[in-house]
Length: 585
Image 1 (spheres, rainbow, N blue to C red):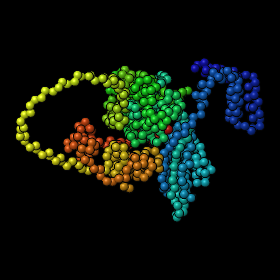
Image 2 (cartoon, rainbow, N blue to C red; image 1 turned 135 degrees about the horizontal axis):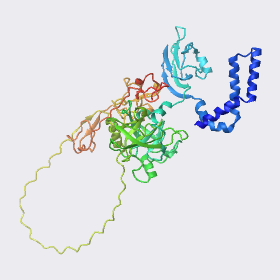
Image 3 (cartoon, one colour; image 1 turned 30 degrees about the vertical axis):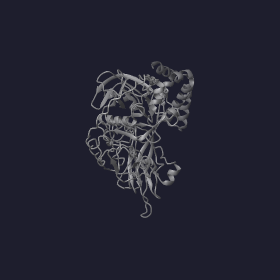
Image 4 (tube, rainbow, N blue to C red; image 1 turned 180 degrees about the vertical axis):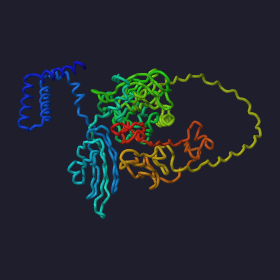
């Protein structure tokens, strides 16, 4: 580093005092002062511009040595990220956007709908104003001017007339500003130098901006703050930063996914993956074929350690090899009641990585948060009660790992016996008066009854079930309000927030959503344990003791904002950290 700093420094002074450069400066200063056209300050600034322009061209070899430092100093920082502000259809509205230390920002209003005569007024901290109408937004492609400010207020002004359409909708869908992204995350996640190395673990994959991993043929785990998977979400099994081939991409069965996103120790997500669309194989089967044994394609869940080392394997970013799989091992520093703390290096994109106990090779948690300034990075324990319960529920849905078909020895040829000798004739005894047999009792009428129309956890959204009380009903409860929905079974109803009936294609069709409202009848002895009124007590032949009664899995709702959501203060965020760009960490 010293060499890189000294070379340009000594070179600049030698050029500055060279006769030609000095003569040029004298001419500029003399002419400027004689003609009184150029203020002294401008003379100095223009002179410096000339000097530095000559410096830039004087030595390609010297500047080559200076290249790295030049990029780090003069790199133009620009971040574009989605933003979720939607006023709804209102007459007036206002909000404030604050990004500390940014030199400028732009706001995307392209999805806004302004009534004729309505305007959006943008006001910066120094009083600069921009007025946006429907016509001006069209000319601006829906994006504001570049505003040199770190804070801007946005106000919707209704049209002046008292009649006609007065309601408008202000949508800010994207922000662009002059800061480099992820600096804060990088500083907190690397516990010292970046010691991660390339990895080729077939059990972990890349999902969106996070990492996911397998614990069975088709059960996957990720961090809860990574967001709810949609029908287009894919888990990519690849070691590079590129997308996986189609045969290594797996869609999520979104109806099985549950998550929690309330900060350290309260952050997890798990669901089922569907078979590959080309090969028809479940991911665990395909990944096991790559590593060579029947169950090597997924992690074994282990007990929580109190000492030892932790390995984190995932798809955190790295300069020159963005989002390829990398791994690092270092010490476990704390096993708290719901989370683990450790010091292997992680980066943005490692969220959802398996937390592996190095001494046993077993997975003991899911990585969720950086925080080396607080003693290490953090992950949710895999034995946290709600987390563990849902994973076990999913493992039950996915069924046991199929055992190999046994090979049987050929059936031996039966022995040949000698024929029985002629029987000896015994005299027939005198007949005895036998008692009259008792009449065969008439079997009792089979026990039967009725259950409510809904059967929990049968994969069908039925009468009385909604996405808020049943795992059987599909939903999207996050993201833009206009995209949210909650399926319900049975007749049409209007008491479900964002509710949609089975007629909506997002609910999965008749195979996944039922409009039937009739009760379900059960009969003891038909071989089906229907639950509800049919139990082991009154029908043990249908409901043996080892058959658990079907119970719905509880749903979880986050009361705070997840990763990268807009925030104003730390308490707005599930991670209790509102970053400098006013986005949750």
